[in-house]
Image 1: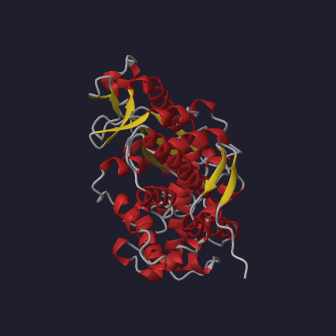
Image 2: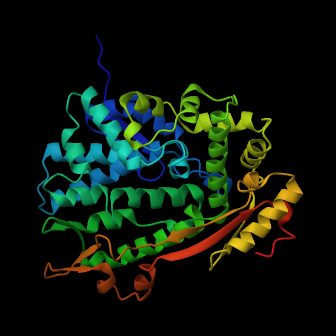
Image 3: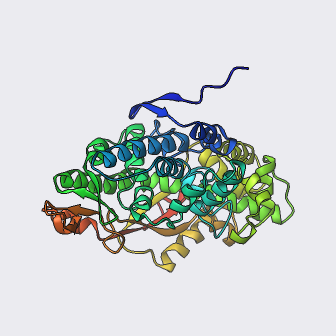
Length: 414
């Protein structure tokens, strides 16, 4: 009886060839939980701004695993002892770090379920897979939870300079065409080291770190927080909110069985049983888009109009400003929407709303990116850098937005 060859080579447009060198990694990739990531977009609704941004969480997870393997090789070359079990665990942990994302990634994170993050759902998936694979993921879960005694291993998975950020910046820059987000990931990998159980960058790699932080800031403003992407994602969450509202009022809406379940039930963190996890694993972008295509013809004006905005890319106007809009300004816009669209005050809140976005490229209050000087002493990258703008980039920048229908554009004084 022939055996499946589980040692594969995949072709990736970012790194070239990615090797699957472990049968367990192959089996995890083949599992339906992981294959679902092929149907979860990496950049949410950003494809409405950047037409090429159709890549998926599946791409991203494989890329993270690849650069984790490259980093482990570099650290071993520099004398850092990493066992085969630890290597496998690190590869598994980074491979599965995003497995808990719901449809359209961050766009709907607290819309499908409430009070639970995608990281927590990832852990639930990992625990379930650990049962399926008879405890072979235990060390990976221990590292992912930050419970392993070698702390630098968690920093490889989750820190201000981790495999996740290094891949998504390079990958999202490539697919969106936002060249300013591109980073030299290979140079950064070669500069990694470990000192005092801390993941560090050698001093000669400081310019690559500076570029990384600047690239992250630019990608957030130009891609992740692009005002049109923000508007689309806000409309997406309001569509689901309206659908849930109508469902709870007794309306019957066309949707897949998994989506119907989450429309009918308010699922919070403590409700996330194994059965709920199974239903969540059946949800992806296609459920949402299919439903929205049907809902554009719904009898409810709000649900229909919001759905048409996404399907036809006829999004509301969004204006960014330095100060928060006053209650009076928002109320005035809602009053105009009520008259212009013939809707109620409650319905107007779906079309006119305000909020804020924040960009902080580097968090000085968080775990620092350590630069290791020639005497092996460690210093925060902000102190080590001769770039004055790094200090500026460590300060959060907040912008406020107001969204309203385009028909109010001439009357809006915002």
